[in-house]
Image (cartoon, rainbow, N blue to C red; front, top):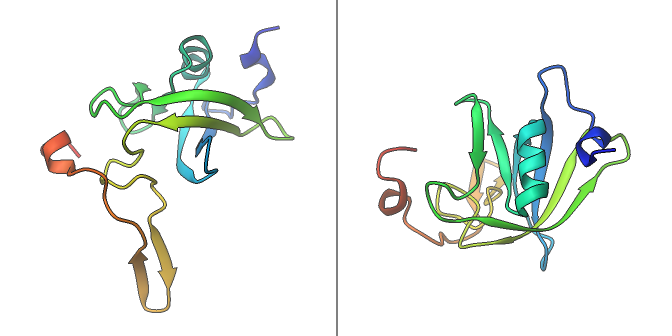
Length: 128
């Protein structure tokens, strides 16, 4: 049995995938994987996702160089969510923050709770 056969992909062929720092347990990001992205991740030990907006496979770090080295792959009790424990290179978020979860909802709005690790304009230009 292939490992991908253990995953319950939805009607669009996707499964949510959460990336978590393998040392600190900080949640870095949530994206989607299709079967190809899951299999490439297993094969290369580098995180691959499926971009819903672009409709194609996406290697994390292909534009920025901020790759995710996969240290462990876990599946939830229902088989419909993946958890990747990763070693994050530089930062996970395209905004420049280490985690995509850098805003805390508070009364009156959101507060940024972390500093940026890189300047997104220098890395991506106007591509984001």
